[in-house]
Image (cartoon, rainbow, N blue to C red):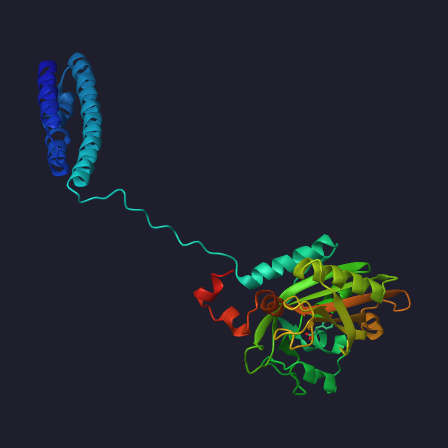
Length: 346
Ligand code: DAH
């Protein structure tokens, strides 16, 4: 029996060495390792042998099977290499062709600006907080000193939710600004607070080059003892310099927002013409970038902060507007129309 196994080994290996096609390898495997192969027959027949014979033949037959399997694997590898080598020689395979590089994504310009603005305020000690896009009328308006039927509500073209109370009012809306988070944050903690709130806001707008129905704002506010308009000016001046350049100047003028008193708008001197007057700044030399003010005592009272003890400042700015100014982009609609030719520039 052992002699027969040796003979089988020699024959199988000689044949295997001559094979150079994958299909011949498979035929060889069936012939020498398949169900009907001589080796399999021998292994099956072991049971009929005497104990001694079984031991010797079994060990030799199993060893041969392992050896043939390993030889087959090695030969398969060699055949595969030579198939590739022949394809290269024959010109059917060109391994010098550059591969296809995977398309790499990048952050949307709004996200980049959002992070940049957040970082600036974070280094000044502000904490980042987010809030809901669908908001109660109470937080968006009433608590911010904008009562029902007050003409100030016309400053925000509002998208109301299709949900009415018994008296026919619609108490939910898509927030028109990030200011409602002033209330939510102050309701849940005591001063001092220093928070910024980035997020989406929604307006019932006919869209055009400067209006979108959805855009991003960043709200910021600080409330503590002894906070004055000087703190507001210092903080926002620092912000303007870090975002638009160390040489920037800022200008504050009175403005009206129901939740601040006094209310201001902040402008920076035009970085394109350095204040001389150009198309970007409509000839004025100044560009308005945000609204701000001292938190209205009425708003503080709402959240049980005593306005005799605490004061604070607040501001709100539009992220897309910052981007448009910084990069000279003329149409806000470009940000969300998914044109990769536009987005890849950032
Ligand atoms: N919420 C205002 C808006 O959307 C922007 C704003 C103005 C926010 C003045 C403020 C502020 O916090 O003090 O038009």
